[in-house]
Amino acid sequence: MSTTPDPAASRPSRSGARTLAVTSGKGGVGKTFVTANLAAALAARGQKVLVLDADLGLANLDVVLNLHPKLTLHDVFTEKATLEQAILPAPGGFSVLLAGSGMVEYSRLTPEVRDKLLHIIDLVKPRFDWVLLDTGAGISDVVLFAISLAQDVLVVATPEPTSLTDAYATIKVLATQQERRHVGLLVNQANRLGEGKLICGQLQQVLQRFVGAVPGAGFRLELLGEVKADPAVRQAVLKRQLMLEHYPGCDAAQAIKALAAKLLG
Image 1 (tube, rainbow, N blue to C red):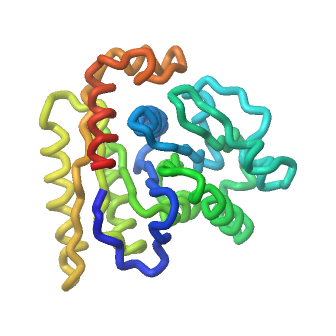
Image 2: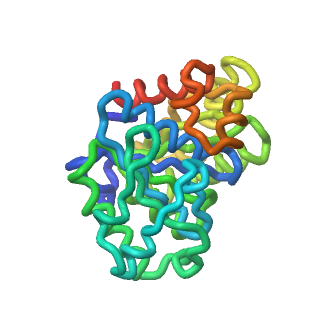
């Protein structure tokens, strides 16, 4: 991502782990799948990685990784377990802190939820090289607060019109409300090579009308990855397997590896 520190005063410092929020405007675009496989790709390059399931209301990271945790973020929040007990090893050589599905009481941004999430991030950052926040979709208060805890953002979108419309709305909110001047984009399920570049250019052009109109507030949407539609992805999802472990040579896996290299570069 951008090496230039963000001017927003509320942005976390760069001490400890590099924090990346993986989000999307619309659900069902493969955000969690991308997050899990990106974590595996970073781990394969020698990075110590934690994926924190920040989709508190509709968490499904455990399903993607075929994990059945006895302890979750809920147990840490309620002090039934320590953070060390709730952080679990995942396939692919990285660690996870799972939310557990149906945590309805955490689906609204109360002062308690804010404080607990902030505290968790502060505790895990010194222990890892990367903390990936797998957020919910959309622009709810909980999602936006989770994103605000990260230094950098990766928005996942597909070429479908509804996904692109929602991605635009999300990026616009991040640029205006959180004053972000750089957001990464990953186009998933691309139909052909180069489609991601075209989509990124179109989104940047529209965004510039609103964000770029403010003097001194240049905004850059950067295409960080393009994952072509690949049958191996569907197979991995159905089998609840990490694509990078079971189909490492497929086109989609190569694209995720390239994303990890770009982030580290």
